[in-house]
Image 1 (cartoon, rainbow, N blue to C red):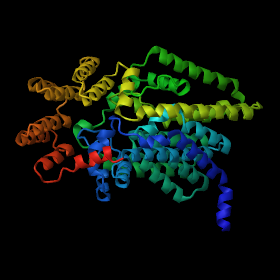
Image 2 (image 1 turned 45 degrees about the vertical axis):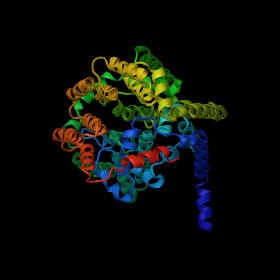
Image 3 (image 1 turned 135 degrees about the vertical axis):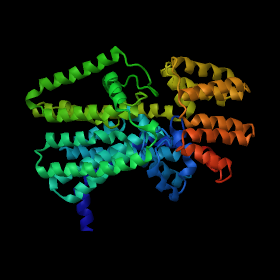
Length: 543
């Protein structure tokens, strides 16, 4: 009893902080548990694979497959797959439960942010206030309300755990903390490819916050070798298709051409403008100018308080923002999604703590009451905005119709708008938006646009035109499995099982490691049951 009382007394602020975070997030996002799928990655990585993750026995497979289960996938994220499998096993595929899990994961991540800030030697009140602001920042709504957005909050959990254990190891010298840090870094690797920049960040932390000795440097090196060796071996075994290899030259070029994204993201963090649902758009000179003005303003504050400024922490915050955001803008398809700010925004918050709180206090400015009053207003305002914005993620029409209104230059938004009208049986608008998507692609359409138009013409019984667009899709990228799946599905609808199998086997000849095509072949040959339809219908109607 005394031990419990001692524990409660020692960690009462932690318990209070967790309760504050829990209730703020719950009241802001509790309604998302009634939401469905929006048709943006969630159908591909959950609904289409739900029959492969509905039992504990199938969990072992997640270490051996990419997240999208495509032969040319670049994304090896077994912990994301594992989180979806756990949800499926518990709920039986009920859509709202995935959303509920997102909220719980977000709550855990926010609380670990609070602990992480304490490890950086910020006071308990400041750490809590900053964590509460983070928890309801409108730019992070998609991390909670959009099911696949959880990957960044999962990533944050393991990054924060890594730093908490790593700092504990430095402070105490206990090998157990080093081991836990190594496991956390491995978990980061199994969650997202962002792990590649982690060593730079924690070695930078080591040199900015401490005077590292040989032991701490060797420990950090050993942790890195342990985690990366296991990750690289498993990833190489899983992502073995030539088309799925990383193109570092192209990634470097993308980074150079997309430096404006850093300033665009700064603008939406501070002004909450252009928080697009699907922001695949050009970044303008005006966007960059606003971001630069913000940086200049922050630099002016730093200059004003220069005598009492901890520039090492400012450097660490800037490095955290720029490094954690870098993987977002080096990918081959640049879409400036807001959930990708989940970790980078922490760097900006660290800078703001130093500029708006610590430096003024060290300079003798009496700002505590003003700070807490302003923070309370910001938290309430952010919570209200986030609550309202979350409803954009309620279902397919709520998301894509608004995404197209926000950004009518997005061919993906136009394509999904066409899908909405197709479900409603409005073929005139379906055709209109399909060709709007084709026109917006500016002569370089993605395979999904060409196959969607092909499927449209199959539905109209205009097979010649349908095959024409499927041929264009194959010419564009013959390694895309959905070309052969689509053609096979067409023949299945015509009850021509022989031709349906022939298309799948033709695809397998080109993509021999395609699990999607191989599984469909087994289903058509009656070697395994086709339980996917039953489970998907349960997921859609189970509530």
